[in-house]
Length: 262
Picture 1 (cartoon, rainbow, N blue to C red):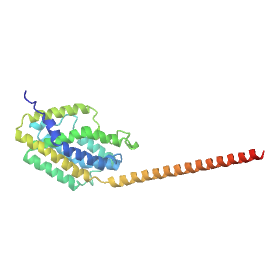
Picture 2 (picture 1 turned 30 degrees about the horizontal axis):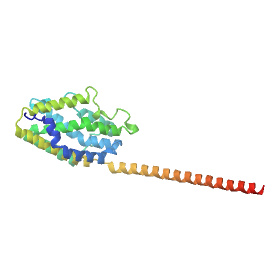
Picture 3 (picture 1 turned 120 degrees about the horizontal axis):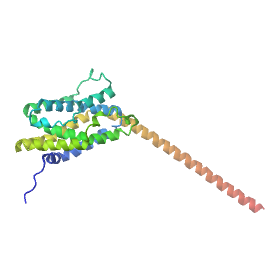
């Protein structure tokens, strides 16, 4: 019996599994603990904003090609990024906005791919949007731990009001697999290998996120203060119980002496 051919979306996951796991570890180490802080969340949005914007504009430029169907209605995030950044950084955030070198390098790589072979951008569309569908929800949940995140304001990027995340995942996988059925094996392999670069480049811009160390120091300081207070409370409780115990012993001895004298 002939072996069933793997779906292209499955191959894309498998070839990047190792570096994907390393990238997830880095995200959790770099951002996971501090993502509840608004300043770090805004920094995370800022480094990915230009990347998602470029991809959506590129898909629009090539809407009459095979990748034209990859931008699923309701999937686009550019406007959502801008809304959230305006909330955290102020409505005039673009005025003094300078794209950091790490993001510039990422964008230049994407431009080179578009000039060389636009279909190679498929690797970025698949991995980044699927990551936002799933990983973005995890990061949002961590952010929701903070009281400032209880409101939906500032969380537009991870919200999909008109369509479910499950539906978006299914539609994107279907579009990717259909696209792959219409290209040759060499291009398929090039796209699969480019998937590894997606996570390498993601790691470079995540490493550029500012404010993480300061937030960690504040959290560690708070934890240290809590531990000191608990230690003091324990010591006071222990001393109180010791005094009570000594008082009880003295009282018992007095009773014995009184009983003997009687």
